[in-house]
Image (cartoon, rainbow, N blue to C red; front, side):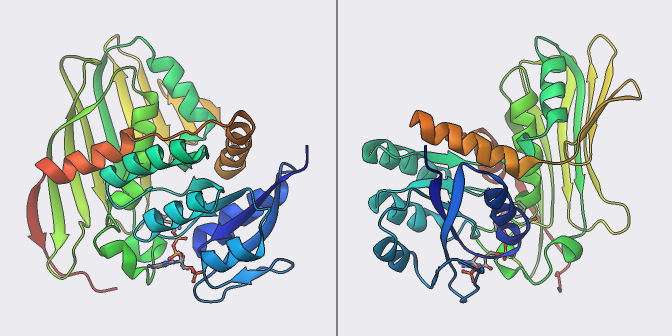
Length: 313
Ligand code: NAP
């Protein structure tokens, strides 16, 4: 079977760091074009300023990967589906849960595949932790996701605006791991959102969750903070009710059990994402996973707001 002809829309950091290299490595895809509002180009393929020009010029296109921030993504997905192409969506998928639900229905009517990617789910250590939590009760699970926004998001103004999600932009990666590994559903119980006085989105947040998987008196919490300088922390620590201590570190790449590393594979998240996309395309099946996104929406819904000092980039 010939490779799927795919185009990438939005040539920013994640498109260059991950999507374009993974597409180049995967024999089931061939890059047929890029769409860049700012005119960024990729050698050897045509560049278009707007998606409409791509669809007009490349009629045998199979799919697009939408690597813009979430704000413009809903309109771009609708346009792609109307043009008859399948869609891979970066995270967070859309500005709102309602739009994502609608896009899933639109894709079904159009008989096209949509794929909500949650890249942090695609690590072997995440699957290993999921296997160890299966059928278990938890005494404690604590997410600690603390990083320096100036280091990881320099000059990304969109991240502070409505539909940019603030600290939930990385925090949703932890939540996507959580919803993948937990043996039972998770619900937001309470949240506190700390928002700089000059910004629309939070710089830090704490969340307390409930879950039928918790043992009596058990706790499930998340702490997201973008003000962390020095050592960066992306960790999920879980104590099983029976006493075993599991620790998922490095953003989901390393799992240790009672202090011994049992899984530590190099990061191949995006190669796995494209392998999964090729399988979904071959099967004609969409994958729209709303669970991480719903937790963010619920945190915003029940969260108590506190203003903190202005953030200057
Ligand atoms: P970025 O470096 O700011 O790039 C985003 C690109 O999207 C821009 O360069 C621009 O490319 C295009 N774009 C279209 N409409 C835009 C708008 N209204 N505002 C800003 N850019 C717009 O962002 P990124 O880090 O690649 O993140 C993009 C998405 O990937 C986000 O949803 C993010 O959460 C996700 N992601 C990022 C990372 C990471 O490490 N950075 C990791 C995983 C996932 P053109 O000028 O070519 O149109």
